[in-house]
Amino acid sequence: MARWQPGTRGRLQAVALQLFAEQGYDRTTVAEIAGAAEVTERTFFRHFADKPEVLFAGQDGFLGMFIDPISTAPDGTPPFDLIRRALDASAAFFPEERRVWSRARQEIIDANAALGERELGKLATLKASLGEVLRDRGVAEPVATMAAETAVTVFHLSFAQWIAADEDRPFAAIAHERVDALTNLVQSAR
Image (cartoon, rainbow, N blue to C red):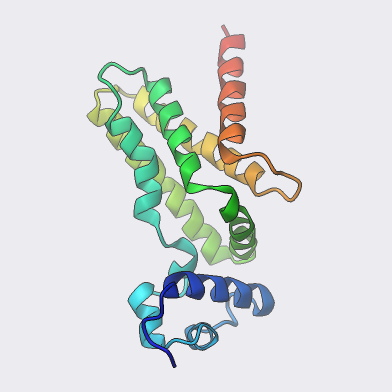
């Protein structure tokens, strides 16, 4: 088997996704993924800690896409504007070329309860991290937690729409639409 080929990580992810779709997640082994990608199991484990990590790799980058824009915002930026900045930045994590992969990934996750729990855990980590960075910026409770929860809800709804079969708009446009809907909801309550 070839060793240290360029693009190995991406190839492993693509092959794994294909095998998961064809055979099911639970019936696919790391050995099969490595073999189909023409690498050794050892190479697989250089790139991923375990089989689920093929679907969940990049958590630090994902969190950073939300947290960095909040951390670097000018002092005095209102909490809702901080959330809007985070959602705008998160759109960079979901370019058009990633949509097909994201749709297929979500189908695998939706078909496996343990993977669904891990996905929910990822969102819970995002909420906690956003709450923490907001509190670090001086946003008081309960506003910091409400803003973090709101950001994750808007993100989750935006992502679900972005991967819908009949959707072709950019992630940013969908996220803006959701933020605008939330703004209208809050303003109508006054």
